[in-house]
Amino acid sequence: AQSVTQPDIHITVSEGASLELRCNYSYGATPYLFWYVQSPGQGLQLLLKYFSGDTLVQGIKGFEAEFKRSQSSFNLRKPSVHWSDAAEYFCAVGAGTNAGKSTFGDGTTLTVKP
Amino acid sequence: DTEVTQTPKHLVMGMTNKKSLKCEQHMGHRAMYWYKQKAKKPPELMFVYSYEKLSINESVPSRFSPECPNSSLLNLHLHALQPEDSALYLCASSQAGAAEYEQYFGPGTRLTVT
Image 1 (cartoon, rainbow over the protein chains, first blue to last red):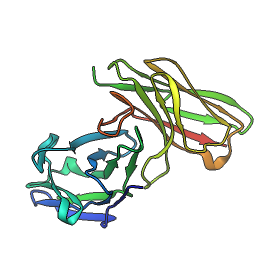
Image 2 (image 1 turned 135 degrees about the horizontal axis):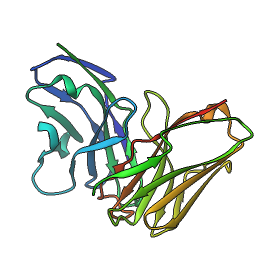
Image 3 (image 1 turned 120 degrees about the horizontal axis):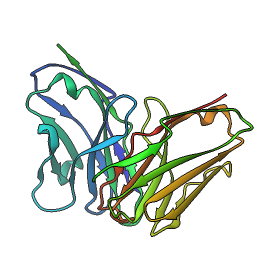
Image 4 (image 1 turned 90 degrees about the horizontal axis):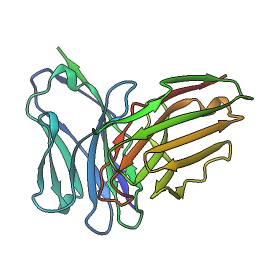
């Protein structure tokens, strides 16, 4: 079965600083990988996804993520964080053997300091 | 239209009440999902409907009863809930019930069981 680990429970960055959120997955084949963002009291919004091709994926709101098979990682990055990026970030993996069933990481809470 | 709508936004119910949550999407998606989310936790999958048929039930107690009347609509019927069922209930949809498709989430219904 697939699994996802987000090692950082909480990250604080200053506005304008760069950001990297870590995600490690466990799955035997090439997984389908997603990053979602959730603002307080809201649903989840897809930031970006990867399932084949270029390992550097561009998403919405200036986010990008890089798939590294050798490290089983799919880290999310943003070069300059805005105060509105403060939210909960979830990495998720979908596997072909569990059609429609994504496994979510525990999430990383991002706080942005002015 | 890439929106998933959920009603009501908030619901307070007693343990003997019967209520229903409603979810609607008009994106032509053929898979729909119910998740339960506790504070500071990732969404937990409850049910998946694929082409209006229940395809996944994650061993959810029978006091939760899903229904998919048509391809655009998903209901969750609630009866005799417990206080520990208080949570944010999220609905999502995807193009099909396969791992490579991202999910579109609604804003959720905040449920409080008294």
